[in-house]
Amino acid sequence: MAVSFKKKLGMIYWNMHNGFQISLYKKWAKNKKADRKIVLFESMLGRNYSCNPKAVYEEMMERGLDKKYECWWIRERGCDFEVPGNARIVTRNSLKYHKLMAKAGTWVFNTRQPDYIVKRKDQTYIQTWHGTPLKLLALDMEDVFMAGNGGIESYKSNFWRHSRRWDYLVSPSPYTDEIFARCFDFDKNMIQTGYPRNDVLVNRNNKEYIDSLKDKFNLPKDKKIILYAPTWRDNESISKGKYIFNPHINFDKLYREFKDEYVFIVKYHYLIADKLDFSRFRGMIRAIDTDISDLYLVSDIHMTDYSSTMFDYAVLDRPLIFYTYDLEGYFEGRGVYFDFEADAPGPLIGNTEDLIEFLKAPDFSAYQDKYRAFREKFNCREDGKGSSRICDIIEEVTR
Image (tube, rainbow, N blue to C red; front, top):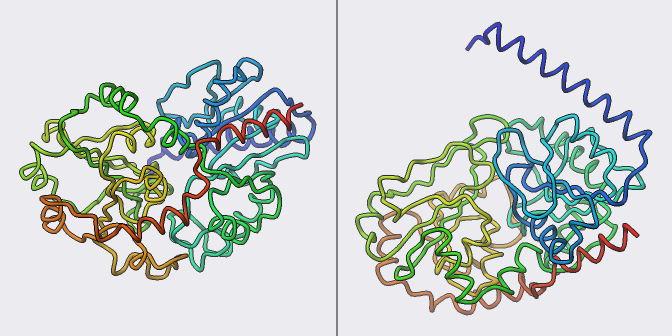
């Protein structure tokens, strides 16, 4: 398809404008001295207020540190979220963003930044990461599938340069210690603690708080709630970093069978850009855009596929279902760190009919031993104090 003249002009302007800002950033990064009282946060490429950075920031709020420090949250252009407390918001890739990247004394991120962003010695980078790996990750990968990447060697080189910038890396289990050290080639400060985002699953897993969340999201208290949170598919991209939602579930059949018994909450992966309209299901099936930790707490069962949400949800010791319609070919060429089919702590279900049959009389008793082993392996550090430990580090490095 031919690109219009107007679009070409827009692309030229954007490239010139972006290039100018990058040049200024490089100048500032070379000449500016870091301000230890500025703390910069970002989650999921600036697309939402969530995950480990959110939990760390809210612990800072609890301690009153959002008043002691100048806290900023990076927000992607076009995304809509607010931040509580005294933090301010800066638009990703704006002039102010580049100034703050050059000036902030501490960065708290859970994904990578653009390749030209280089951390200086007087800045501290705390990389919280965003999940426990099942599929091969970073330098362990044998091929790269994400749209827009320039091949495996380019991908690994870029990843290696970025991980050089990390001063601290959160690792939630001995399992991830070994993998992160190798796949990120990381030999600095490993923070061996539960994921900060899971603190709430330990500290607020009580009826009063869960009922307040159900009221907030207008969820019934007399029906079972199933959270469906699948990962993205790298062969179903719209453009670089944007993917479609194609779950291979007949939601109409689910609605007819279970409208009086269950509520299904759909939580999209942050890379999903093509979303479905569930309005015809009258609230029985609905998407809720909020921090997934709240959705873990209100749900009775979590249905996922190969997403790292399985590891977080297991902190609650509640049932897991794996909807794996593409199990036969999904891992082909990717490689995994453990035998998913053998170790999955719940049923593997491949189509809507089998899902309906299982949900009519769900029985998880056959998976008790696997579930216990799963939690011991992946959740052994989840004690509700991860955020506190990272805040201690922030206060220490900013003295």
